[in-house]
Image (tube, rainbow, N blue to C red; front, top):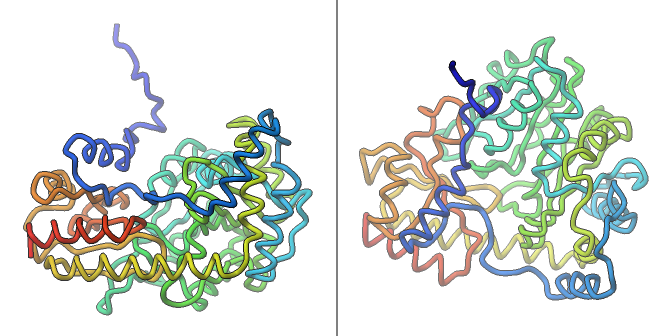
Length: 390
């Protein structure tokens, strides 16, 4: 008899994430890991102390399903302070196990089998997997390098991606892996298409305070979009506590309710002692968030300069903590082959951009580096790349 595959068909093709693979390669070879996107230092001490105090105070059992009320209030205060968005913490804010769960619950709670989700390609790898698990279909719109070194898309190609089957627009701004920050005119086009086709927008904004060029404009603030937009944030990215896995989804109560229905059957709840700590973090002064952005901008400049000296063509990011580099000037290899050889050749790990595209040919000349590391770490990695290719 022929045994059917153990892995469900909707997950065929989704193996171990590229980030886990490259981090394992870094550990195996001793190479400096600029692949997986996590900082190498902790966030604010005052936020850590609240988590510690909460553990010893007994805040270790299940928190409320939607998240503690104080954290939901703090999330609402953050959205009001920075973007003028008014939220009712009772039913318009949902705490999740990181932004990844917020995304997965959005697909599962909002999509019927066969619905289509428009997203800009390259996409963060969890998007395609989560959309597939929901039985929906990803409709990619390529973001491609422009003559000025930025990333852009074809308006008509975007329009063609929308159809009567379109349920969601999946937008990531600032965008991982390209570093693109969508400008107001681009967002206006997206808003018009969402309203024309009665589409819900799910917006991944986890890098919202790491913008170096332009301004982060939440899609929810555009006319007609507040009632059809879910905004997703991440304490892990905002405060450099990626292991805490505390995120959130905010938006109109009926849509948040649908997402909460799915979320309760995923993790149910998480991070009880971390939720009071994140609430404190969200109430830090504006100087914390400004400093975070400036520190990342300085790190971006440091690594971009090193990559330029090493001979790469650098596509300087407008936001996030990632930079894309064109490997064409230093090798004839494609991105996957180059990244697999990079630890031995240069003692550095990066991620091939081809894994982020549905059509991997579109990213076969580009690789992504993470610069959320100490200056000394970035300088050493840069010198190794210069020595190997410069």
